[in-house]
Image (tube, rainbow, N blue to C red; front, side, top):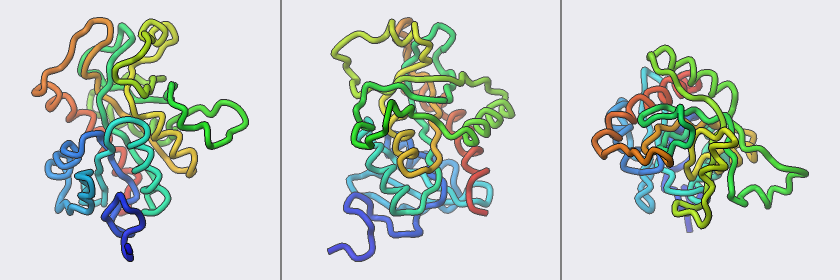
Amino acid sequence: MRTTTPTPSNGAVKGDYARVVLMPGDPLRAQFIAETYLENPKLINSVRNMLAYTGEYKGREISVMGSGMGVPSFSLYAAELFQFYGVEAIIRVGSAGGTMDQVKLRDIVIATSASTDSVYARPMNFPGTLAPSADYELLSQAVAAAEKMGVKPHVGRIFTSDYFYPLYNTHEILRDTGHLCTEMETAGLYLTAQRYNKKALSILTISDHLFTKGELSLEDRQSSFNEMIEIALETAWLNASR
């Protein structure tokens, strides 16, 4: 019987996580962020190799944890962080496929909302259609941080799909309805944050484009993702414990 950990999927104990957590999909990218940007990072979870660390960024405590792929995986970990570990805000840092012509490879997208084909929100019994939306304070802070760095992000709606290999072609519809890009996690994060009345934001780097068919190499992804990570860290720092 577990006596110190609140859940079977996370080996951390209460107090191990900071108030703000960055969540890339890949746990190895969580390790990269921790070892590259955080001072004195401490490994706090390795259950199922979903690596999580807590360290300091500019003197304030911040955590980083992998989320896995898709809404079910992301929402499971996000729900546990919000419900059992005292986390107040989660910032997703991930990749996405561009859909609009003005969105180019390496561009940063900050998601105001995430339309989705997922039925994740159905059990919440909301009397209508619940819109998966970002926290405005986090969003405005991220935009300001990007502009201070000389980065001009695209800010707007995106699409979260349960299908990496879609059963039907939605690309034209996404472009016609002004969705900047498509990915697989943001709606799960936003809906989970709304469920627990917490803060959430998704910051994405365009790694490929559904119409131009361009895509970044592994080396380009590494260097291009740094801008996204730094924007997220600056935003997290504003909301972290001193």
